[in-house]
Length: 262
Ligand SMILES: Nc1nc2c(ncn2[C@@H]2O[C@H](COP(=O)(O)OP(=O)(O)OP(=O)(O)O)[C@@H](O)[C@H]2O)c(=O)[nH]1
Ligand SMILES: [Mg+2]
Image (cartoon, protein in one colour):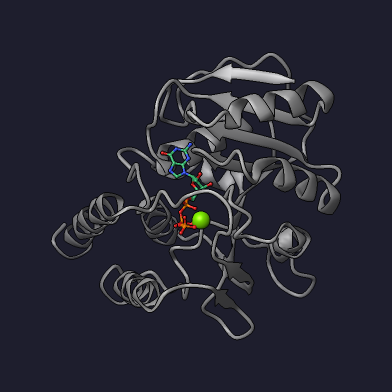
């Protein structure tokens, strides 16, 4: 098992690497903050659905003991790894640090998903396959999308639907990113392509996902979406608080300025 304390934020920086993964390695990464109620079940479900993948949890020292549960599992299974950060630094930087770690270890593909079972690990094989369609050029990014035919969101309040609709509209129309579900945190990424992107000063919080696609689209990434069903969390508490939403709105406005002014 690997338990690593990390503290860098760009793809150029060095990282403590003690063992490389073979080319072709797929890493499933989960950013967690207080997901002790669901992490065990999620780890099992990921391994059942993609038995050859490595699993990387990026935990911000959750007070509820999420990291301890992951450590116990990692002691038993060498495909489970924990990146433990000293304090809460946001979903965006956690996701980015996971990507950096996976890339520097030599992995080819990373897939990130939420730690609360809202994303169904049974969709992982389909998402992975979507990167390499039989009849088309390979894609750099495949998004598990709730907003294309066949996609769905279960259990959300009307307020949540309205906010989500607005963010998607804003990203498509104002930020000019031609994606139906740019807020989705369920994505497969080719790490070689990601390593060529400029990720300096990318949004640290929830707007990371829109910001990332905005940059990817501007550098010519090939992006596809496949339908998934997102089920609202049944365990643990939401971290998408009002403050996080406001931070996200501020970050999206900054990107809008860069889209239209620069
Ligand atoms: N490492 C880390 N993970 C975070 C942080 N904030 C949120 N997360 C994780 O990011 C994922 C998405 O967060 P959620 O709270 O589920 O956000 P959401 O899916 O938009 O909203 P709900 O499902 O309603 O709670 C979960 O796995 C969280 O534990 C953070 O600051 N650091
Ligand atoms: Mg969630």
